[in-house]
Image (cartoon, rainbow, N blue to C red; front, side, top):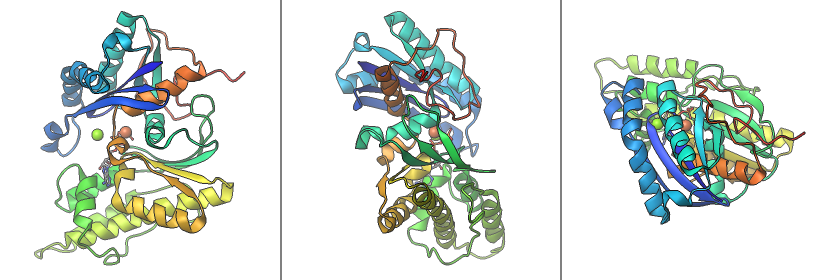
Length: 341
Ligand code: ATP
Ligand code: MG
Ligand code: FE
């Protein structure tokens, strides 16, 4: 079956087409530039941009795949978590397409999409595997079995901030929005040992980034009148974040005897997170999987990937009056997981 995935939870409008675990085509439009002058995503602007972009993006994905709308066998859509107005636009579009074509609709958890993104590059996930997800709004260490069937176990979660820590510190450093890529870029010429930023919550699988964020802002304030050594600050911050993330993830794999670590979400695009994860997994004999850069940040292909797993597992479709859930907890990949009873 050919599954269309639609993503609209934040500022990216994404559409992807997946058949039997294979990505056939996808397209993403971003309203990021429209938010840059405000220093963060403005929900109303994002919703309107989704409205304009949705149909063209679906068309582009179909063109890339060499398919027509009528070739689609099922539609998967992000129902949460995310910005409510943004989610509503994607869900309304997905319902329209599913209803018009007479095909099933599946509601997908956005973070499960981030996890499934990796399957489009590296094939099915081993069962079990450990997943470190670090995205704009979430940081969790998860034990994942079958995405389509099993509940997702949380070994640890962030107590405060997540990937947006990069964006907030970038602002304090005078770097442009979005901060993640800007810090990554600035860090290239910096010394990661220049500033000794804190490594919070050692010995726990939970995360905390608010202290680190404050420490970085204080450090920036401590350089008045002089040129701020941004490269050193960026490199040191990135090192502290990569250190904490990869140390905990590898420790969890070792403690639980899980042989594969999958690192996903927007922050998995960070070059130091990727290289330190590689180093530490190799040393611990753990198989590391990280999606290609373009599939780390929000896209429709990852939602199609979850939809494809659900369809092939025989999951019950969502009713056409299904609603969004802006703060959906990550318990299952789907709104209507395959019944295991
Ligand atoms: P969520 O998935 O939690 O709802 P989101 O969808 O907004 O949030 P993602 O698209 O997964 O988040 O990731 C965006 C985040 O990734 C932003 O905070 C951005 O700064 C960060 N990011 C992107 N590239 C990099 C990078 N190279 N280094 C660090 N962070 C990065
Ligand atoms: Mg985004
Ligand atoms: Fe995301």
